[in-house]
Amino acid sequence: MAAATNTMALLGLLLAFGVITLYFNSQLSNMHERINKVEQDSRADSTQVIDTAAYISMLRRVDARLHAHLVAPKPHALRTNCSVNPSLHYEDTGETIPECPPERGYLFNQPTTTRLFSAAYMLSLEGHWEDYRVRRDTFRNQSVYVRRFIGVQGSTRFANDYVQTTSKTSKEPVLGRKFKGKVLLPGEPGYLTPGEQGYLATMRQLLEEALNDPRVTSILVFDDDALLHCNFAEELRKLLSEERCGGLVEAESTGGVLLLGSALWINGTYPERGRWTGGWAQVDHDMEVIRQRTGRSTQCFNVDRKTMGTFGVIYHRQVFAPIIEWTLQADEPFDHLWPHLTSMGFPVRAAYRSLVVQDVRHQSSVDPSRKGQEDFLARAQKHHWDMTQYCDPNTEQPVIPPKKA
Image (cartoon, rainbow, N blue to C red; front, side):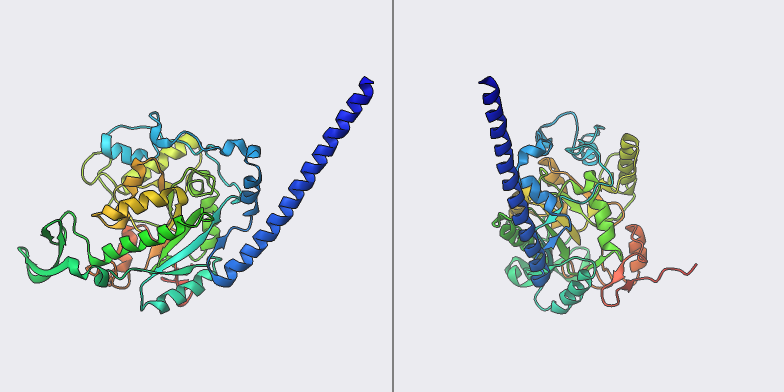
């Protein structure tokens, strides 16, 4: 009798296992069909960028219990024994503290299996269609499918916020900003150009739209003067394959920002603390600390207060709301946002070798005081941009031809 009971129990378990197997097989089949459709749609309407192995990320959503190691950890902001950004922590306090490790430790050369960019956008003002079109077509050749997002024209939207005035240092009229009952001059705290106000409003609108779509896990945003690395697709794959860098923006992470390119203007005074602490000296120290800790070179660094640029950035969904809130009261340009996010516990890192740089051969629409740069090579050198590595979207050839051996 006992043997019969055991046999029936075993048969019951086998039957249950078979049902579960059939269920997951059906789910896998359905997911594969959905992924194929998404990939086709993304190439048809240029609204999405999908990783070739994104099905792994979908599998993890079928039964999260199979991946318990992905459960969100204690928020970094609540930890006291480490910092998401030791560089900024040092600038603020003078205290040296370890970096909070990635959720799964320091992993290198892992397949980019969980990266799913729900959408990629290029910010573009009215009247700049041709700039967008040229880059859209060039980016497609690098497997990046961007959608145009019409930006806010600051000179129109915020025209009533400005008045022509004079300054003590210049006989030429300047554009003063009416702010909190005062007229601020360029260079004074709280002064923003109309273009900078327009950029803040543009990003706020974009993130509000993304936040209202529950399917969006992260977005990739380009400025319309971005120049891509000539081997962008492969370089991006390598960057995202490092957990310390790519893990910030994968769907299952607790959130963060990854700059695919940045501009640092100075070497800085690090380790001496002061207004000019941040810069290449502190960045190189940050990179060396990670190398000593892991035994491997890393591809990204913690931003400091001198890390600027928005020409190519990946934003995780968890940072959408904090950024929106910040833009509503910001009195600084958008790329001064990074320390604020860090203070909330979100890591913000930048590719050490920029995959995206700014085309500085023309006047900036955000800050017209930055004229077209005849000495753009000198500026590129300051930012550590090797212009033989970045391609002109019109020719798809390096901006500066490499020297022949």
